[in-house]
Amino acid sequence: MADPADLPDAFCLGEDDLGLATDLYQLTMAAAYLGRSPMPRATFELFVRRLPRRRNFLVFGGLEQAVASLLRMRFRPDQLDYLRSLPPFRGVDERFFAALAAFRFRGNVWAMREGTVFFPGEPVLRVTGDLLEAQLIETLLLSIVNFQTVIATKAARVRLAAPGVQLAEFGGRRAHGPQAAAWVARAAYLAGFDATSNVLAGHRQGIPVVGTMAHSFVMSFDRERDAFARYLEVFPDHSTLLVDTYDSLDGVRQALALGRPFAAIRLDSGNVGELARRARRLLDEGGRPEARIFASGDMNEHKIAVLLAEGAPIDAFGVGTQLATAADSPFVGGIYKLVEIEKAGRAVPKFKASVGKATYPGKKQVLRRLSDGLMAGDRIVPLSEAASAGPDERPLLRQVVREGAVVEREGLAEARAHCARELARLPPELRELSPAPEPYRVRIDPTLEALLERQQQLVSSDAT
Image 1 (tube, rainbow, N blue to C red):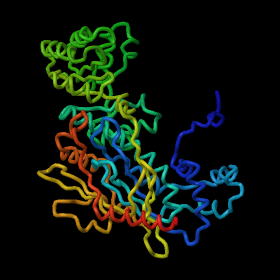
Image 2: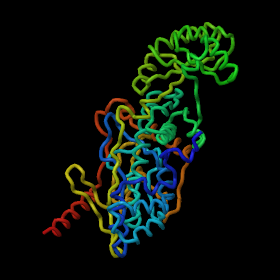
Image 3: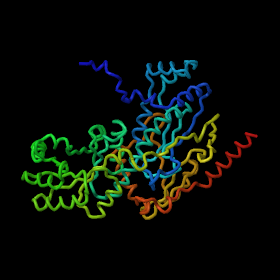
Image 4: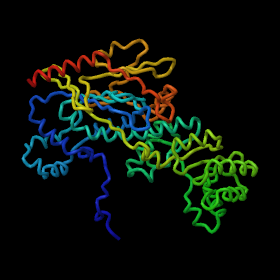
């Protein structure tokens, strides 16, 4: 038997790998920054330029993991030795490696509450720290926030399509690896799913876990009825019987023939709506009106909405592949851009003028207006103007980290409750699965426009 120590590296990301979970250019820039004395303070903002396809809004996800990761980010001696071996770093001053060895995030983070609905152009997270540390965490933050935001947004759409119906996340086997699978479960629960099949997410995040059985379990017995009987024997109070291995309706009859109560049946293929109606009749006539019908099989928000609109008697849905991969729109273009540098105690706003990729300078706040309990428009303002918020506006970003210490923390339960309130505040046209006739109104405050114009003029004068 092989000694586990002799097996190939499993290449599983651990907390002590966070320092190298980045792009090379973050480290080369950090090395180049190190020669600047004193090291300037810098502010970066994380936002999305445009909505993904088929989306009317986004749900901010991943804040808890993002904050924990940047505060735990370290560089081990063997990792520093690896960096020294890379050609770009062979001539780099040893002070750079000493700085990485001593790296601890000491900056400040402002963010929207996790679970907040947001829109293009709105900073969901702002980081201020010395230039090296604020730059070095870019890839880590984006990889966490972009992914969980994609999944939370997809899950929110499913929840909006199925109000009051139980939803279970079943996507672990289709997710892009075990780390992604756990984050899928978390993001789905954040956005309103009720449970997950992912046991790790249940253990680490306290998410309710559910499961049924596979076709292989049924096939391993000589008779379908024997498989059901054995499962009921072991799990008398928690048996959801998968009835479609051979013939769905005959499977229901086989379950009923046992003469014993069971929690539910699961339909995983075929015309699920019609099968659910016929199965419901069989269950009711067979004396099992309490047995629920659970449907799965490549489900998404559109299929679920149609099934429910047609009156299919389905009590719960399992959603896997379409959710875990956000199959119809699998990415969000979140970016992290420098917006301010402090020089000699003076804040210098920074902006990007690239065509199609322009940014606004300076620290910003997002003010949201509500009308009759619904979102009625947002305003992006310079942070210095945030105090000018109207009586019906509320600021969305708040400080969560101060000088490297957490000052505001919400767990998953609080974020989930907040997300439910946010979805309830969506205007009716944004709740629809189809694109809204008009995008939600996000206004750039005139003071921000004026600041951008002044900075553009300064850059132009410097160039001449």
